[in-house]
Length: 324
Picture (tube, rainbow, N blue to C red):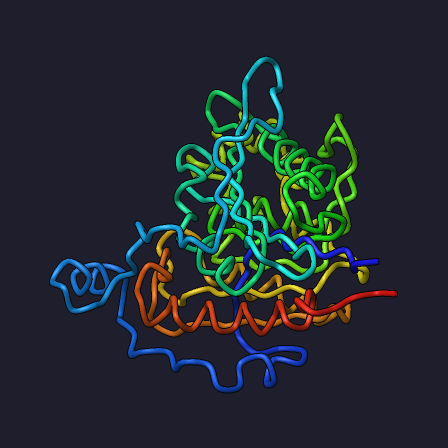
């Protein structure tokens, strides 16, 4: 029986912590950083920073299944894209990617590059659409992610992948949703249409961890996501915070976060990994000096992130792992 291995990648990528030395060994080095995000932005605009080509074509070796409807909450159709290796010897595990955009914008196609790159390695990959604010408020987005996970679990045989267990990967708002899906057991955030599979690991890129900090309480994006000001819904802000769902049984977590992030302070990732250490949860933290939000659009940072994520996946969902 193939070991259940769906990699829903909610990516929290941060510096060295439990077992981190092995994970980061041989990784491309962090390039010199910047004093603040404005300096980094100027370097990008001047062409001094090589950027990732986000419009890479799908190779012939990968079957792309796009715009599959996986749910329709309140008549709102939601789609998922799949990328499945064509000639896999066994059904591969699937990685679920969750896009960012402050919970109010962004699209599943934003992560097509990651989907294709990891499908080239032999994984099945998926990228999910979810309901956005301010039209839809918490817990709509996390319920959608949970339903996408349940759909993947139920449709692995149809599309040729193993959908019983998962690793999640996400950036920014997607990182937040990946962490929340990995850590929370709250039925209010689950999927009414079916049970999501076990999460084997989560990868978080600069995601929000705690919506109750003073800065988060006043952030427009967080207010729109929750749908109420903190003064009227403090318990909801806590419920929406991955940090408030931690326990010793949480899956291994990998985080990447830049120290000059202008949208999500690096202190969010610092606090998360301090708490994971205290609980004894395996975790890996790449605290990247002098790089801002969406730093993985820069080719040198992206190369490093993909290298480390690949090693993380080798420990959580090795492609050749089979149970008799």
